[in-house]
Length: 155
Image (cartoon, rainbow, N blue to C red; front, side, top):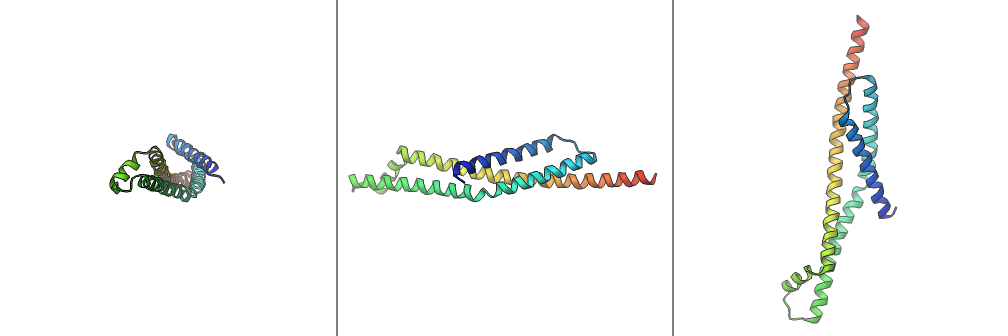
C-alpha cells in the first residue's frame, strides 16, 4: 500500500472505532438484545482496533523519518553556508540554518508526524479502555439476565 492509502485506511479505521465508541456511550443496556449489541460492538471494536494497531509501525517510522529529514536539512544548510564563509562559528551557522524556509518546513512536518503518532497511541489506549468497559457491561448484563431467567423459571 502507498502511504496515502495507508493514511486513508487509518482514517477509516479511526472513524469506525469512534462510531462504535459513540454508539456504546449513547446506549443503555438492559435486555438480551442489548447483550447481543454489546457483543457485536466488542467484536467490531476489537477487530478494527487490531487493524489500526498494525499502523503503529508505519506512523512511528514516519515520525522518525521526518526527524531525520529535518536534521539532514539543517546539516545541508550548514554545509552550504560553511562553503561561503568558512570562518563563521558553528553555533551561528546552526541558528541561521534554523531560520531557513526548508528547515522550518521540515520542522513543521516533524511536529505533525509526532502529533499523528501520539494521536494514534492515545486512540488505541482509549479503545482498550472502552473494550474493558464493554466487557464489564457484558458480564454484568449476562449475570443479571441469567439470574432473572432462573428467578422466572422457579416462580
